[in-house]
Image 1 (cartoon, rainbow, N blue to C red):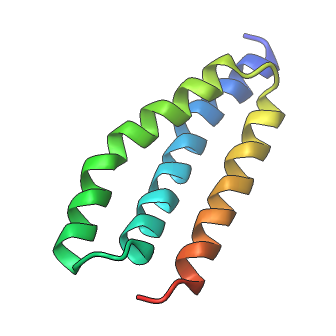
Image 2: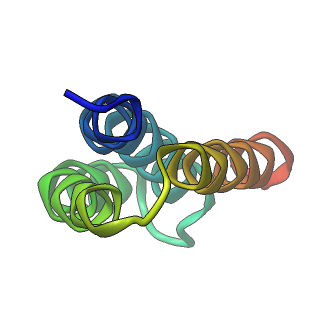
Length: 86
């Protein structure tokens, strides 16, 4: 396998998982609903976010670019979750 193909596959599987986890943490912390509703929203949106993010990793032209997008978006979601009022 080519190096770029391996980088894209690992980004699609592992990078999208990190992105989905950071996105649901952001949803669970920042959504202006009750605790149960925020948990349910995060729980049910996890698979949808993970699959959508993984699709980007599979169609990306470069594995490095896919990793960069995943890391940047994960950092953004975690920063929003950290500084959002609970």
